[in-house]
Length: 170
Image (tube, rainbow, N blue to C red; front, side, top):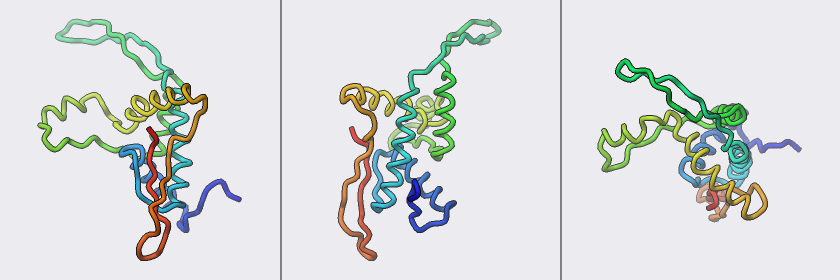
């Protein structure tokens, strides 16, 4: 038996579908889909989250020269370590790059100030929000994994496919 489900799609379409739904799951926290797709999404999302959890603390402190008004000063910057950088690149290869959206009543200047230093918001969310949260959960429970939950919603109208909602656990 293969290690993945074919989902009745060609490989390129299947890979794009899973990639899109994993991106949506990690960005919004939940996705409504069919049971077979949810199982495929769960496998990919949990592997990506596990890699992020295992490497999110790998940082290196570096001093950089910064020129401000013709004056050179040294500034300490935290960079990703080699393991975290490799995982970051792997996650970037497996999810789409989602850009931050402006809040409904947020001014343009506030939006620019909030998103000025963030180039890849989904990747930052994975490493800064999900990884610490699930690492703490891993220490408390003494086990890793189980970051997604699948809740059945009943058959879909039209083709009677089993509908489910896949969410990230709290």
